[in-house]
Length: 568
Image (cartoon, rainbow, N blue to C red; front, side, top):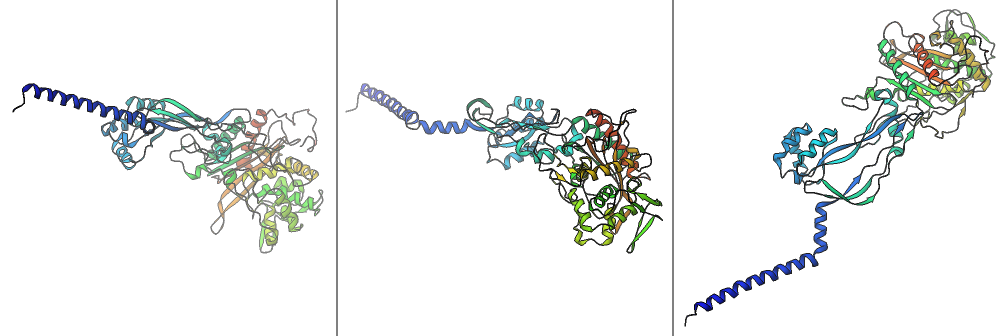
C-alpha cells in the first residue's frame, strides 16, 4: 500500500532536520577540537605566521677627537627587504617596486625566484628616507623596511686613512674603526613583533633583550690640526706633481698622535670606485730609506759609545771618501767640520767616518732602541715593522751607508717616534691614538745630555746656513733635519725618483710637537727635502703651535732658555 503524501512529507522534514542537527553536531565537535583540543597548536601556527623575533640593531659608538668633536657617527637608516614567497604572488607589482628602487624588474624577479625558499631577502640596503617612504606607500605584499645604522664621517677624506671605515653591516674594516672594533661595536637586542600579511610590523609584543650600544671613544687626534696637515700636504703633493705623501704629528711628551694625513686620499662616505692605492695608510704601512734624517742618530750613537768627544772635528776633504770599492760623496768639499756642521750641512763623509769609528754593535744598539726595524705598537692595521738588519751581517760599506740612511727602512710613524726620543730628553714614548689609554712603558734611547746636544745641533740645520732653513717658524726655535733619498728599483737606485722628507720638533727649548713630512717622487728639479718637505713642516707647525696655544720661545727680547730646560 503506497505511503500517504503526509508521511512522505514528514519523512523529508525529519531527514532535513536530522541533517541540520548532524551538521551542528559536527561543527560543534570541530569547534571543540579546534578551540579546546588544538588551541595551543593552532595559536602556535598563527604566531609562526605573524609573530616574529627580530633583531634590535645596536648603535655603534662614536669616534671623537680630543676636544669632543665627532669624527665618526652612526645614523639610523632603513633597508628594504622581502619575503620572496609572498612577494612573488603579486609579480605585477615588481615593476613598480623596481622603479622606486632604481633596479631592473627582471633582475629583481630573478633574485626573488632564486631565493624563493627563504623568508628574508635584502632588496636594497641603507636607502634614502624618501625612497623608504615611497616603498612603504606602495604596500607590495611581503616587502617591508628594516631599521639599521650607517656610518658617517663628518671630515670626509681629511681623516680617512687614520679613521678607516666600516662595511655595510657597520663593522670596522680599516684603520681605527678596525683596531677599536671591539669597543665600538654594540650588542644587538631582540624583540617579538606582530606583522601583518604584508610583512609590516603592527606592534611590538615583547622585548626579549635590550640593545646595548657601543662605547664612544675619544681619540688623541685634534680635528683642527688634522685639517691643517691634510690641507698643506695635499697642496704640496699637487704643487710638486708628486706620487703621494705622508705627515705625522706627535706630542713629544706622551706620544699622542695629533694628526696623521696621507695623499692620495679617499672619501669614506662614498667609496664607489675606491682603489687600494688610495686607501692605504702610507704613514704606517709604507717604508722608505730615511736618508739624512738618520744622521742625528749616527752622531748620538758615536757620543753614547764614547767613540768621539762632542768637540771632535772631522776632515771631509776633498768631498769624497773611499770605503772598499765604493765612493762616498758630499755635494761639495766642506773641509774640516764639527758635529754641528755635519748635521747642518748634511755631510755623508762626516757621518761615514763617525760610523766606522764605532763598533757595529754600538751603532745597531742605538738605532734599535730608537725603534727602527720594529713595530711601534700603535695598533694600526697593516703597520709595517721596517727593516734594520742585525749588525752581525754588516759589511764595512753597510755600516758606512747606514750612517746616512741607506740600507734600512722605516715608516713615517716610526721616524716620528724616534725623533720624539730626541725631543723628550732621550726617552721615547709609545704612540697612542686613544685619549688616556695606557701604553707600554717608555724606552730610554740615549742619555738626556746626548739628546740635548743633538737638539742644539739640529737647530743649526734650520738656521740660515743649514739645509732645513725653509722649516723655520717665526717666533719659535725649531730643530730638525732634511732628507733626500733615491728610490730603489729593479737593477739598483733610480736616478730620477726620490723621497723628500723633513723631521723636526718645536719649540726647541722645550719640545712639544714632533713632525715628519715625506713627499714621494716629487717631479721637476726641486726634489730635495729642504725644498719640498721643509716648507710643509713650517706651515703646519706654525698653525699647530698657534692652535694648541704653545708659547713662543724666540720672541725679540725674550730671555732664551737652554735647549734642555723644560723638556719632559
